Each structure stands twice: as C-alpha cells, then as structure tokens.
Length: 343
Image (cartoon, rainbow, N blue to C red):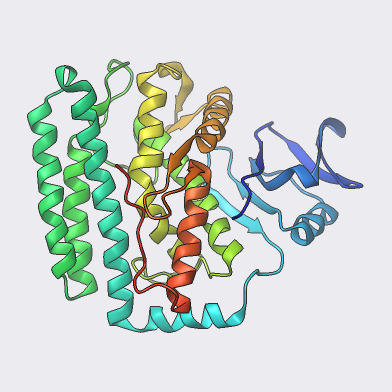
C-alpha cells in the first residue's frame, strides 16, 4: 500500500523553488520564506510558475516526488517525474488492452458503471439527509434515470453508444446539481457545466478540484507502473492523461463534487472568494485557493471503507487502490476491473 504522505502546494505569487541539501526552499525576492525536508513530501504543486531549479527537479525525480506546475488559477501546465515504476510487461498488457476494442469497451463499461452508481448515490444521500430542503421528487427522478441508464451501459456494443448513454446520464445528474446547494444561494448557483473557462463560482470550484484530482490520479497510476496517457474510455490525444481521466470518473461525484458542496453548504467560501475576468471567466482568489487547498488535504485524510477491499483507507488513497486493482486485472490476477462503488 502506498503511504499517503504530504503534498506541498505553493501559492505564493512570484515564488521560486530551489534545493538546499535535502530540503526544498521557497524563495521570494531571493529571500527564503519556507524550507521543507524532501523526505516529508510525495508531491509538490506550484501555482503561477516562476521557476524551479534544475537541482530541485533532479532531486524530486530521484526521490519519486512529482513536481507539477499549474497556472495561478489551476490549469495544468506540466509535471516533472522520475523513472517509471513497475515493469514493461504491465505497460505492454495495458497497450494491448487499449488496442483491443472489445476489451477496452468492457473496461470502459466498468468505469462508467462505477461513475453512474456513485453519481446516483450522491443524489440519493442528499434526498435522504435533506429531503425537507429540496425538491426531493425532482432529484429522485434524475436518480431513477441514471439507474435505468446503467442498463444502457451494460448493453452498449460500441464506444460511441457508451459515450452517448454516459452523456445523457451526466446531463441529468448536473440538471439537479443546483438543488444540492443548500446554503449561500444568493452567491452560488449552478445552471450547467462550463469548463474553459468556468462561467460561475460553482464551476470554478469544480474545475479547480477536478484538476487536483486528475493530478493525484495520474500520480497513482504512475506509481503502480501504468501509463496515465493511455486510456480505455478516453481515447488517446496528445498531452491528455486519458487513463487518469478514466479512473477519476469514478471519483468525481463522491469525492470531488461532494467536497465542493461541503465547501458551499458549510459557508467556508462566499461570493467574495472569487474574481471575474473580461472574458466571463470566474476564478478563485489567491486567499480562497489556499483555504480550499487546506480543506482538500483534510478531506483526503478522512477514512472510508473501500467497497472492494473491505478495508478502511483514507480518501486520498482511493485512486491508488483503483490503480492497483486495474494493474492486477491487466496482469490477469482478476477476472474484471472492479470499479469504485461508493454508497
């Protein structure tokens, strides 16, 4: 089991990362403002990249520490990683499965069964816990639609058909997402999913957390020796970590979406936590981003019982477990890939 260590998030504007012995040092205006031992870290994520020393990049690579560069508002730019873990046989098995349309389809089906199951139970739990505060029947209608759509996933014979069923289910899920926002309704509302750029505060939060989740998922896949760029549901595209996007589909609703709803419904953020740009984009302010990152790290440490392993693990380890299970399936140790089925 991969130990859940710390991720260092660097949000200070115009900061530079360097190496001093076995420590990462954060500099601003050539003066050190923070020093952290490398052995305490599994990842470094820096926002608003201004520079990192080649020595630090080399040390991160040799220590197995991922070093990711994002824009000031959370868009992924690049990542430095060291030698690939695992062995060539596993990756060859992954590539053969991805090139086999029938086999790739079956893996993609299991991934979407997990995603849609989890989306449905996010809705069901909200109705159970807050029925008097929302239109319970409207939300339950969407839940039933998603439940029926699961049959379409199981029966799909082509990748295109599968994506069509998933798209309809996702649309129904997001059609009632605004109903799950129970506080701060004057500042937070959701009409539809908007990505590049996010056009409202809820979409800004979703996009930011999805970026963090994708980075964590890609690191988990690399840690077990899989190629994050070769997927089964998301097809190959230059620069896109298709397999990371595949696996995070199972985690979007129960992990990322519920976290965003918690931030809003517990009033950890308000309308002043965001800024608007001339092109309509809505983005998190720097101080709000720091608060969100702190809360995200706390959520990653919360424990659940993994539905397949029947063991208690931290939320932050779920992607690592799913990567391990996928690797076991590709090696032939499991008959099918078991998706994460939260309830």
